[in-house]
Length: 390
Ligand code: SF4
Image (cartoon, rainbow, N blue to C red; front, side):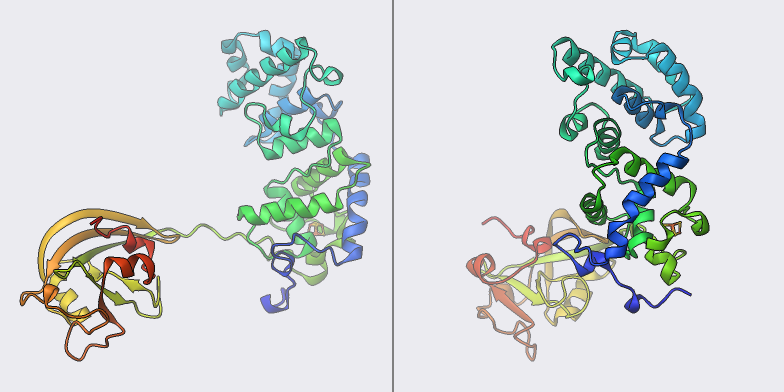
């Protein structure tokens, strides 16, 4: 039975901001080499694993993006037969290359691959990177090739150039989350960065390619999203999720919340000297306890709702503009209106900090001058951007 969240160690939060302090010796020391050995003995025979030629690895990695291994194999074999080197691909007509890609989809991958081949070919002819026939041999330079992201740069770097570069995708996030008992959202880029840091810290320098591919292979064959095959797992002994019974609960994926829209009328109620009416928001909810410009939900009769909410009589004059403010989970669509009070209270001489209506709490509603709004009063950006320029 999975334990309560409060009992679960959370490496991500435990070491927030400082990367991972690798506290569990058993978990951190041996599993990378055990996994590498397991991969070297048990790796599936796949055509791109025949050797570590970076061009061959790059073609495979680009073909495998968003495409299943079984689908890729026949395409890869034909592609490598017709374009065995970057030079051959660079010199082929684009139409012909796209034809080879027909059925794989996402044709931008083929276009990028051909562009990358041209750059590698040019580098080779210029005598750059002589040991790898013009293929860039640092992580940054590989990442600079068209169509190559962090994952692909790390895969090529580790497999072909023995760079200590962990390639982290969804599969690897799942494996590492279970292995270390990480309860952070695997969809959060900050957690992906943290996991990359963790893997860099335990990266086995002797077997970079086997380690990177071992993690991929484990995620594809053993540490499955549902019902992981823990009994066949080479690193079961090191796995915290297995030990604690968390394998079904991990990894944590928090789907992005749908953003809601709130339509509102916002009022610029100015006094003759230019001071604006502001009010304190309720303590709870969005921007709780901060100052706001008077506002109410935009619906029929919103003017009366405004009077009721702030305890002040208001005559709405004209609409100044529409504005929008986007929060993480909510968007405000605002109509901004100019207003005054019928008895001239907008210019009635009510002092700063003084109540706008009899009996009103002066801490909740007040007039504020331009200077105060600029220097003293913390008005949230959503409202600040609605202030008049003059
Ligand atoms: Fe995944 Fe199970 Fe292996 Fe842990 S023991 S890494 S949950 S397959």
